[in-house]
Amino acid sequence: MIQTKIALLFGGISGEHIISIRSSYFIFNTIDRDKFQICPVYIDQTGKFWIPKGKDPVYPDPTGKTEAEFLKEFSSQNQISEPQSAAALLDFGFSAAFLGLHGGAGEDGRIQGFLDVLEIPHTGSGVLASALAMDKYRANLLFQTIGIPVAPFVDLEKGKTDARKTVLNLPFSFPVFIKPTLGGSSVNTGMAKTPEEAMVLVDKIFVSEDRVLIQKLISGTEVSIGVLEKKEGEKRTPFALVPTEIRPKSEFFDFEAKYTKGGSEEITPAPVGEEVTKKLQEYTLKCHEVLGCKGYSRTDFIISDGVPYVLETNTLPGMTGTSLIPQQAKALGIEMKDVFTWLLSIALS
Image (cartoon, rainbow, N blue to C red):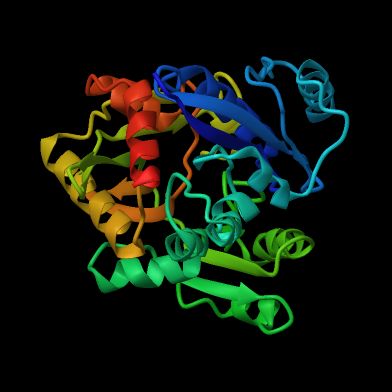
């Protein structure tokens, strides 16, 4: 059987570099080898590409390794003496790219646009949907237009907004939740009960980011629910999975709670009742469609008094063996090997 040659892009320059390495290790070991020849392409934290040349490349187990330790082992086992520029992808005859990247330049449309210019098809959403989903302010505006409940919010822009004046005159009361408008994986996010606490978080985010989203804190049950698409003939058919309830051990579902073993309890399917489950499935499909997502996505919600409030949509959600979409697919009897085949089939079409 002739295998289709696929580049698995992982690592990247975002703050979610190590998460991408873990996700892509699972992807590499799960993709159907009868159909696809997989070449893992490591993008280091400076943006250089480490591309194996052999027919049977190796993806070392990243467990317990730092990024530097992983790169040393990856380059050694694949006999890569030096990195190359991104344009070198053209020299390897890849039919498509599977995006195992997360956050920042991996999820905001930049790598998607670059691959489009190279005419290399890729899994997941395109440039516009990726950029819109990453921009939580503009995504929230879109969600509001289609009638999905969103907690009140304001967007601050460094150098353009008087942040202190805005914080002191918010159109909603404290406590609030603060996060980078263009961030992911709850990096540099937090709750503020007073204007003083809010400014500490805003100033911290402004060190590395240009925009901050401040949102009224809604208390309730945190859930997340994925959407998958399956190709049927020439048509892509999206369908919602089942929700997962997230019970973080910390005050909220922050970076540590998401990616530290035992940092949160995750219950799939979420015990939220049939009516709320149907509403979550309806809303996550609407979010997927209004943003123009492709292949798959995952949307996070807070349920308060029976009402699901949307938090954000992720266009390249985590894909470790214990991540939320694999949990939800398993609950419905769907194999992740099949999911990855669906995603690649959509990309290749």
